[in-house]
Amino acid sequence: MAEERDPAAERPTPPPAGERAKSAGQVVAIVAFVAYLVLLLQKGSVDIAAIQAANPDGEFWRALGRHLLRVLGGG
Image (cartoon, rainbow, N blue to C red):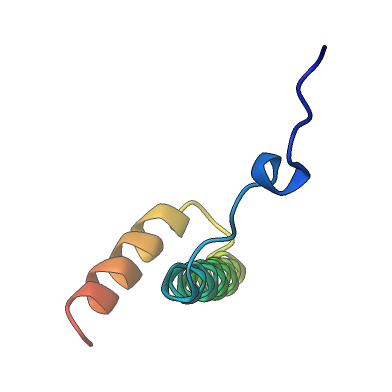
């Protein structure tokens, strides 16, 4: 004869409340990090487009280098 199984024993137990809060915090941190990266990429693309528009001749790479050095130098 087959054994009868308890359906409650087969279901996984939910994580404790502290683990759920930790997971929710991680999700919020990841979303904030992705939003920050998107903001940086958008700002960078706008800066590069402005430099390219201001230097249509072959001076684009020099102007970009000057801009990067000025930004990294805090100026």
